[in-house]
Length: 133
Image (cartoon, rainbow, N blue to C red):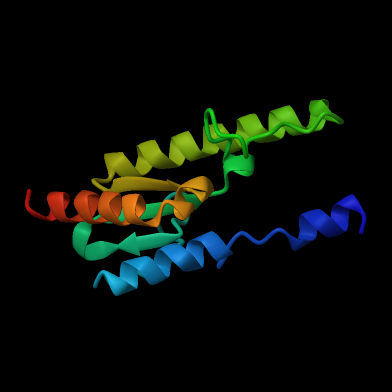
């Protein structure tokens, strides 16, 4: 498989980590919408009742700081480094725009999904503490 076939096969929606988060939220009783294109960054999960959005980020593509999965390819760094910087800057712009609109932005990193109990607690706390305000 050549590079372009590999890149074409990388999904941006309905990824395995995203499906796991959606299942977790559903089991916890949260109801949500998916990929609202009218919001900056088209968030993966939107919880209108809680005025919250969740982005499920892959550690490699979105450059999770300090994560072992956020490796940098050794070859073609003139291609990869600007691409990664553009992703980081876009994520930052989208987060700021959403916050200015009054949305709470929650980022779930791919590597966090393995720590299911911690993630469950973090999501419940973020969403329910916001509701009580």
